[in-house]
Image (cartoon, one colour):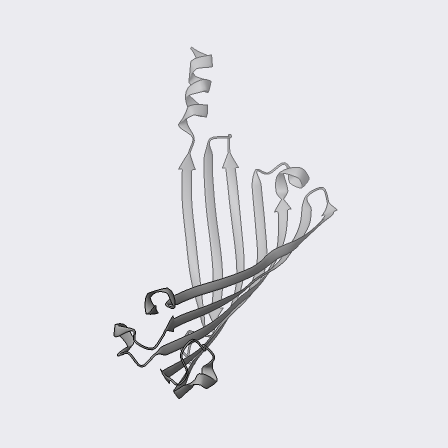
Length: 195
């Protein structure tokens, strides 16, 4: 029966991991480096045998391979000025590199010749489709945080991001950040002690 010959299968394999290195140059400066990768292979098969109404009864076979990979590298320097100068300031400077690639290959066979034989050479019409994508990213960043009296936190940061997807005339852009937070609970505890 055609009903039992319909098949849609998928097989996915994935490997990912990272390496982290830390080096304390001195008590107030440390260096961190993280390198990681994520790789996956996705294989799909879609079989519609002869007599299937959805393919016009001629039989169809679609085979698809999807390869997805990402590399990421992150280097940071951290400066704790409280350890060195008794100032409640922390500074972070860093660099990030990222690369993402996607490859998709699809082969479609139509008009099956022999029943119950599901290989691409058993189809009279064979078409291929291919999609490739590669994106490179690079960032430089700096961030400073001030902690005043364990209750007021002020953060400022600057990023310079570059991407292969940006227009060729302007591949890099700057982004500024400023934020402030007040932990009023610490302030209320101090007032309570004064009363």
